[in-house]
Amino acid sequence: MCSRSYGNSPPEGLGVYIHIPFCVRKCPYCGFASVATENIPERAYTEALLKELSMLVEEESLHKSVVDTIYLGGGTPSLLGPSSVETIIDGVLNSLPAPATPEVSMEVNPGTVDKERLSGFRQAGINRIVIGMQSLSQEGLKTLGRIHTPEDSLEAFRNAIEAGFTNIGVDLIYAIPGQTLKGWLEELSKVIELRPHHISLYELTMEDGTPFERLHLSGSLVMPDEQTIVRMYLEGTGLLKECGYIHYEISSFAIDGYQCRHNTRYWLSEDYVGLGVGAHSWLKERRSRWQNTEDLHQYMDALATGRPPVTTKRELSRMEALTERLLMGMRLTEGVDMGKIEEEFETNLRGLPQWGYLIDEGLLEERDDTVRFTERGILLSNEILALLMRS
Ligand code: SF4
Image 1 (spheres, rainbow, N blue to C red):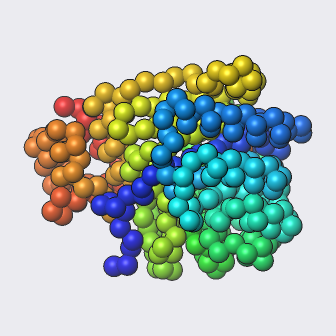
Image 2 (image 1 turned 180 degrees about the horizontal axis):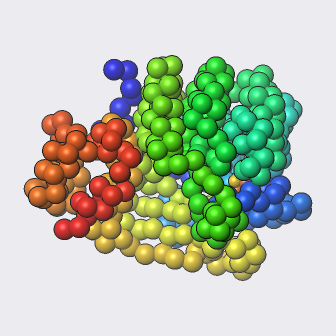
């Protein structure tokens, strides 16, 4: 077993997430905080992000927090020019202490980059890129309303290698209307042949208020049936494992040593701050959680007048923090250290009657203090956690 362990040695320090909310076009399934625009206020938004950071460092007394991971997500961060990306990364690294090589990730839409731009991002300090291929079928991409073709994705991958990236992730979506199990496994095989360091598989879900949700409710968008979706996940997982990828989180697979440190921080409920429209933050010791406004104009106005762009901020109760710790931690396939969690939250989950039921039903697996979902348990993870918290 060569999987790198995170459970007992979580990433230390602070993660900084930076949300870039601009897109070329709004995809009909998308529930993220993003706006389609031709005129990106690149300079003003970059300045607002850095102003938000300096306000946060003061207000939350973060001066000594060591930035271990930075993640530019969106939206479409690759719509920003390399010089803005460099300004943002330098701004973060000049405001807070950092180790010699923090993980600096960036999401890239294949329809927005060429080799020169990717080289620019590399020089700007990005050392891990995540290419949002989503599908390698032209039909699939058309259904998803994406701006790129399968060829664009393959070219972006080649260009990323030529630009010098040595840590490349690929995001894929399955359960796309019209997609078959065979077609999905063929697409996944093509991606595996590229040997990206990291692959994420996301099931297409119907997000509130999206055109896809409306079409689905009206019956004009037909998803693959439930059984096929389960097989897509399980057979996709099997294929990746056969090909040497470590399944380290429900949706995430990596060549050993290339697990995403930033996302692992979320799953272990470690500290992170989010900058930008709609970004979330969490500071563990204070159990403090807050979220920024999802409205671009409100965000810019707040920072222009020196106000925090926060819409909700509160301290989580012990029970809420415990639920979240389990909800996120159990996503990691190596499971959670239940002894540590019970001690931290002064609780005895393993003494609950439903605990024995979940073990007996083969939904949870317990070895010493480590608890994790079984393969069947992963498919019922939300229901299982709801049952545990009903006490
Ligand atoms: S590119 Fe991504 S963030 Fe932008 S609209 Fe499409 S799915 Fe949403």
